[in-house]
Image (tube, helix red, strand yellow):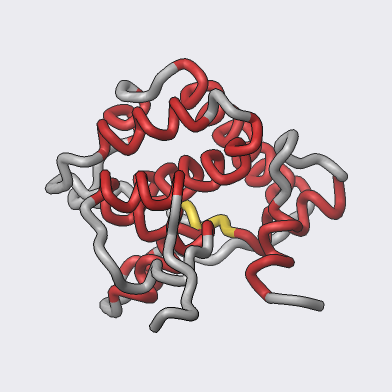
Length: 189
């Protein structure tokens, strides 16, 4: 349909590198592109992780790409946190990161550790991740597996906890707020 936006620039480069053709990413939405690319390349059977991470490193040369690239890295980090054999391990991904991407990865790790610690200090109960990991629908997997991470306790952390943490503490990742992500994903207010 000619009136629909097609992904261009950075999105198209990542989609091409991940081997994703036309489909759910046709509207050009950066969040959708980041989730789809992350889900595709986090799988062990995808040889595209190296190329996608190289593009991410290159994108980080321009500050205008920071939020988009951090979101992509966070999606990958969430997926590999689940410890499923089908995905690369966090250490395997980290070993392939360039210096800028590694700095973002470390920042994300620190942020989510702070969220988990805050949840523990405030007695905010977390749900077990197991039901999430039994989802069979591919579209739900992409959405929920990239939006949540598994802790070593077997519990899950996601956007809801990140937003509560940011609201309570005023602390977010510089240049990247989960509150803004949540507002964009729910549409105009």
